[in-house]
Image (cartoon, rainbow, N blue to C red):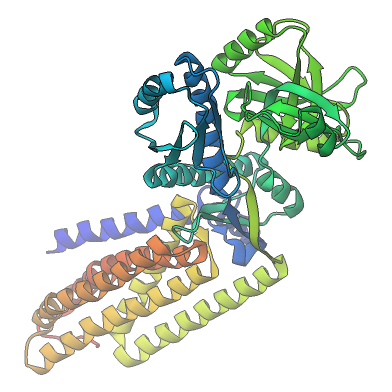
Length: 536
C-alpha cells in the first residue's frame, strides 16, 4: 500500500508543478511584481475587467444578395446576346426592395425557345423562372439560395473584421455571431486605446472597384438623365465623384458590373504620388490581373473609373494595357487614412455594409474596481470556507483545504496554458467552483461519519465513504457541466467565460475531491495504529 501511495503522491506533486508552471510560465524573477506580470501575461483580462469597447453590428445582408443578382444579370445579358435575342434586356425592377428579382423583356418570338433553354441550363438551380408579359421572363432567386448568400455574407464579415482587428494588434478580441438568425456580430475589444480608428476600420466596406465609364461627367442627376434620353441604360448606374477635397462632386454613368472588384485585389500598401502626397498602391491577383489586361488592351482610349465605397475617386483614360498594378490617388488622403485603406484592401472587402446597433465603452477604472471586488469576494469566500472546514471537520478539514487549494491552482493553470480570457462572470465561476468543491468534501466526510457511527473501522469507513459518495458527486458535476455547456453554446463573451471556468473547475474538483483527498486520508491512516480513530 505504501508503494502505491508513493506513486499517487508523485502524481499529485507532478500535477501541482505542471499547473503552477501554467500560471507563471517563466517569470523574470521571483519578486511580487515579476510574478504578477507573469500571471497577467498568461491570463488575459476580459472587456469587463480591463476596459474596452463593446459593439453590436448589423450586417446588411440584402446588399450581398443584390451584388450576386447584379453579376447574374450581367451574365444573363451576355447569354441573351449569344442566343440571338439582340433586342432583349435584363433589368432589376426594384433593386433596393427586391434585389433577388431579375426581369427579362423584349425577347423575339422566334428566340423564346433558345432563351428559355439557356435560362434553364444556367440558372434553374438558383432561380425560379416564370414566363411573363412583354415577351419575357421573371427570375426570382430561390429562398434557399438567398439564405445561403446571407449566411456566407455574415461568415465572411466575421472573418474580415477579425482579420482587420488582428492586424491592428487588439489583444484577445471577441468577434462572433450575435443572436442566431439576426445577421448581427458581437465585437468586444479589451483594453483598446483608440476606439475611433477601430470603428472606422470595421464599418468601412472598402469596396474598391474599377468600372467602365459610359458617360459623364454631369453636374447633377437631372443633367445625366437628359443626356441619356430621360432613361439610364439597364446595365448602367449613376455614381457621384469625390476627390477627397470636400468640393461638390459630379456624376458619372458607369457600367453596373465592375471590371475588377474586391476579391481581385491581392495586396495594397500606403505610398506617395509624384507630388509626395499620400496614396495607395495595389496589386491584383493573377486572375484579376489577366482579366484587367484583356479589358484594358481592348479598350485603349476609353475611360475607366476607380470607385471606392460607391464613390468615384478617379477617372482615367486607358493609355495602354495594364496587367496587375495601379495607384489610388487624387488627393484627400492623410497618412492614417491611406494606412487604413491599405489595411482594408489587404484583408478583403466586406460583402455588405455594417450598421452599428449598440456601442458601449467600459473604462479601465471600472474594470479595476471589478477586479478588486471580484478578487476580494473570491478571497473572502475562500477564507471563510477554509475556516469552516477546519472548525467543523477538524483534522479532516485540513484534507479538504489542501484539495481546494490544489483545485484553484489547477483551474488557474489551465487558464494560463490556454491563454484564456478572465471575465467578471469567470471570477464568479471560480467562486462557484470553490462551493462545489466544498459540497463534494461534505458529501464524502458525512458519509465517512455515518460509516464510523455504524461501527466500522476508520480504514473501512474511509473506503466506503468514498465509494458511496462517488456516484452522487459525479451526478451533481455532470448535470452542472451540461448546464455550463449550454451557456457556452448560446451565451456571449462574458457568459462563455463563466461556463469555461466553471466546467474546468468542476473537472479539476473531481480529481482533487476524490483522488487527492483520498490519498491524504490514506497517508493519515498509514501513520496511525490499526483501529486508532481519525479526526473528522
